[in-house]
Amino acid sequence: MNIIVTGGAGFIGGNFMHYMVNKYPNDNIICIDSLTYAGNMETLEPIKDKKNYKFYKVDITDRKSIYEIFEKEKPDYCINFAAESHVDRSLENPEIFLKTNILGTQVLMDACRKYGIKRYHQVSTDEVYGDLPLERPDLQFDETYPIKTSSPYSASKASADLLVMAYHRTFKLPCTISRCSNNYGPYHFPEKLIPLMISRALNNEKLPVYGEGKNVRDWLYVEDHCRAIDMIVRDGKDGEVYNIGGHAEKANIDIVKIILKKLDKPESLIEFVKDRPGHDLRYAMNPAKIEKELGWKPSVTFEQGIDKTIDWYLNNKPWWEHIISGEYQNYFDKMYGYRMDKK
Ligand code: NAD
Ligand code: DAU
Image (cartoon, rainbow, N blue to C red):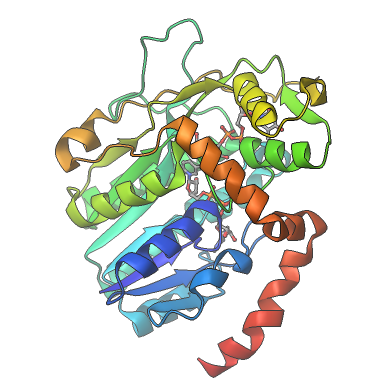
């Protein structure tokens, strides 16, 4: 089997690359990533010598190059993680979000149509459903919940989802969509809440909490997300959307306090800062469909997952220190320039 994974040098895509390369030694796992600021070849370092791993530094909006890869690799599956993923950045510069997240999705699906595919899978997000009120803990998102987005990021992801459904209906493209809640775990870029707070607390820096820190997110350990996507791609039904969630809702301020406690750092590091404009209040996923139809369940509790994550950041300081220093951006040329010439 030949499996294309886009965005595999990022956080979730990187974890998925590790998962797939190790779990399926007889499948070829082919990563396509343009290495934006969020792409990091050091994330792929542990699998770089595996025989079933291949890497292309290509932008998913580059139609010509994407077609060439499809023609050469003849993928059975294409799983699209590549995206601009940070809400705050989408407030500063929406355009790149629309380009990568919508037009990039279109290019990949056009390639699937042109060269044939067993299944195109779109990695989407709970943010397409908008938010829920804090005072209604009884409410959750299921797959029929209306799309109602808040940020340019979530609007671009929802647009891509609609495009996927349109290609399924009109062109009969075999496809699935997964919508997941907030992930955390190894290789998470330190601009997002959990890795930002861990790395800054370790450096005794102030921890910026937006507003009053009461906003709630529903957390899932990244490996559980990877396992869910693998199950959907292989056993999910064409044209279906699957919600994925960890049954682990937490207010931001509680997460920050948990991290400080585990690192034995003082709460005086917390600094309440101006709120994110349009800040979604609460996300809460109902993953009953994937649990019932595919037998998936989260296997890591938040308490286990946050311990594993903190340990990982403590044991892998060079990985995040290179990001903070900017050194990771030279890594591709240093380590891969020579290898790419040989392929
Ligand atoms: P990330 O920002 O860590 O990684 C994105 C990766 O995509 C990077 O390696 C980047 O270089 C690559 N990329 C960006 N633009 C590209 C382009 N035009 N062509 C090729 N590669 C490109 O993101 P992440 O947090 O790992 O998220 C991965 C996917 O999962 C995204 O689609 C995101 O919307 C979705 N998602 C994320 C979360 C979360 O909590 N992080 C939750 C649900 C869904
Ligand atoms: O829900 C899934 C989404 O989760 C994904 O689709 C996105 O790609 C991913 O980035 C994430 O979006 P969030 O906006 O929820 O994640 P972020 O880590 O940016 O913020 C989590 C919460 O923490 C949010 O309420 C904002 C708050 N926050 C964030 C940062 C970076 C702070 O209070 N301070 C901060 O410095």
